[in-house]
Image (cartoon, rainbow, N blue to C red):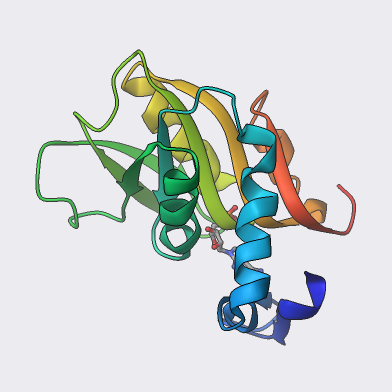
Length: 171
Ligand code: AMP
């Protein structure tokens, strides 16, 4: 799987090594294997909804939702969702950002799996799990293709079950 994830140095800014997943997406066998590996721990765990985080998270979350016979929920950047939203603000290296979810996207009976491409600092993931809990639903886990373990995102997510197909470095 690692051979399909390309390191792009100094993107989008100097000092960042960007994990480019487009080689994996372009190979149907690798893409399918990645989806199977991301979903495997959550088969038969009662997942009712899969949340995808804008934008690359959508690519993985929607097919994983279908594999789990679950619904798909988009979590989006501000101003993109048309109906009533609940929002969560979170810290970036400089400043803050914000994610939103439709208020009626999940109910307390829902068991929710969160899916993204890369777990880095965990800021987006933490804001997303906070949104789901604010709707009263249960977070089953957080599944990613790749984890930058040296950034400590897993710790920032607290007690959430984190599953990463590929891990880079140690935390
Ligand atoms: P974070 O909130 O720091 O865990 O990361 C937020 C989002 O940024 C994730 O959804 C990733 O898609 C993306 N991201 C962060 N760092 C990288 C990286 N080095 N390579 C690719 N994507 C990244």
